[in-house]
Amino acid sequence: MHKKRGEVIKKHFPENPKYWGGVLDVHKSLGPDGMSSDETETDDKGRAVKPKRLRRVEKPWVNTEITAIWEHVDALSIPVEPTSGNKSLPRIHEARSTNTSATPVFGLPGNYYNSLWCLGRHPNERAALHRKKDRPIPSTVSEVCRSLRVY
Image (cartoon, rainbow, N blue to C red; front, side, top):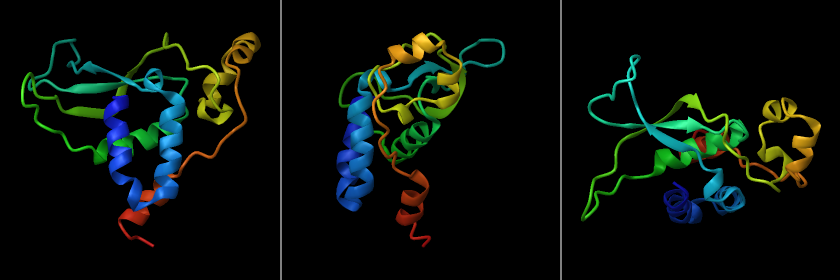
């Protein structure tokens, strides 16, 4: 997921360097461990859905504004058919489950963490995050509007 998102960021960077530069900063800061994971989607009885597809598994410690950025980046990702091996499965961004045992990435800017998740942590756990000074999080709303030429 990290590599694929990096490719999308690189491709779109010339369109709006300010926005995509901010997205690149978030991407590099989070690294591969900061990306959500996927699971095969199942029905209400736990059976695999046909045709097979993936659904995002939420990492509760990630700020929802960053999750919105990844949804935007993923929407711009064009699936490429592999020349060998299995073709990639469709991915549903809306999460139905949360990985509550997901270990957060330590040393991020404080605002990269979900504030409600942080409040639910013991003070020692919050201190162990080694949060750094907040950095701006790019606004997906303004970028989507700009790309659609809404204003």
